[in-house]
Image 1 (cartoon, rainbow, N blue to C red):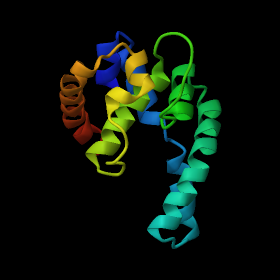
Image 2: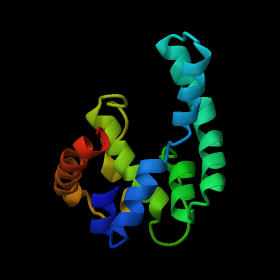
Image 3: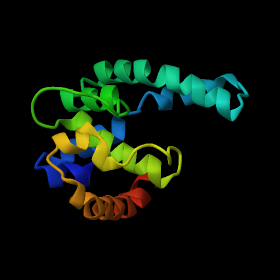
Image 4: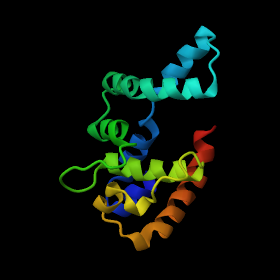
Length: 150
């Protein structure tokens, strides 16, 4: 998100925060499951997280009093066909970054390419920029990943 925002002329630090918290609801859900001792299969856990992460993320958003950019990221990061008026926003930024990360992890390998996302175009990118943008995102992930993993 940091790299995408910088290239799109948006605040990279705000995008970094939005990217970091866009699925923050997973943390309390996973913590509650761990404390309860629940043993769930991988598929069941993913289905549970798909249902609960969004609503719990919104509760965290309200509790922490985060700004609109974080709410947009939490709400729209995986709505691949999202349409809205105006220029690209932080929901679009985090969506492009998340789509790139999912493709890197092969979790969504058969999804359409970045340049076909409305968010990609709304941020002002053209198809010819995809490779250089992906290189920049990979560089950011390489630099920030170890910091975030402790």
